[in-house]
Amino acid sequence: MGNQVKKIIIIFFLIFLIYPFFSYSHVNHYEKLKKIEMDVLRNGKKIGYNKYTFKSQNNLLVVKNEINFIAKLIGINLLDVSGSSTETFKNGKLIKFKSDTIQNKKKKYNELILEEDKKSFKIKGSSFRGSVPSTVLVGNWWNHNILQSKVIISPLSGSLKFQEVYFLSKQILKIKNNNYNTSKFKILMKKNIDDKKKEEFNVWLDDKSKIILKVSYSNFGEWEYIVKNIEKFN
Image 1: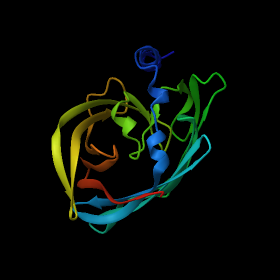
Image 2 (image 1 turned 135 degrees about the horizontal axis):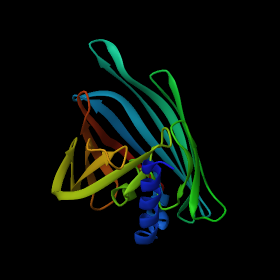
Image 3 (image 1 turned 90 degrees about the vertical axis):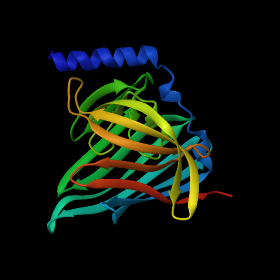
């Protein structure tokens, strides 16, 4: 067994001991949501969208996602992404997830299911296959619990990401003509435990609704995911 695998197992064991209730973080307040629509921008220009729809019935919550954008550099497609996913919760607990994505003409996928012991997820992804503790979270921007998780699962490929989350400040965020009282966080994310290189994300969480309203990061340009529409059931 390689050192990297051993370190991953150790970290998962510690997470299970220290954060035993992450897998049961409540998503009940999302039951009143019908839709969250986000614009995807690069260098201030809209290049696509990310849409989440919510359906609640009895003790199930189903969240569907559609994402589509094309980023160009000197007229050449730098990043072309089109995909969809379905996330299913039972009594607030994630029980399965499935996604299919085409990224730069390459197929990516992730199938996740809660195992019978309810302590682990079985993942069959294009970048990772195996079992992980059910305390680990699928990294989607609709779920504010991403700001509490130390390890997340890539919704595109099933790969694991390790992250540190820091609260920065309280800010008033203006989107179009609306002002929101928000809490701003910084996420430092890395692909491997020992990586010195980290991706940095800024996240604005609405203090009232607990919905992530904006995400920004730098990667061959300045990227933003900004909520443009929120719909709720009557």
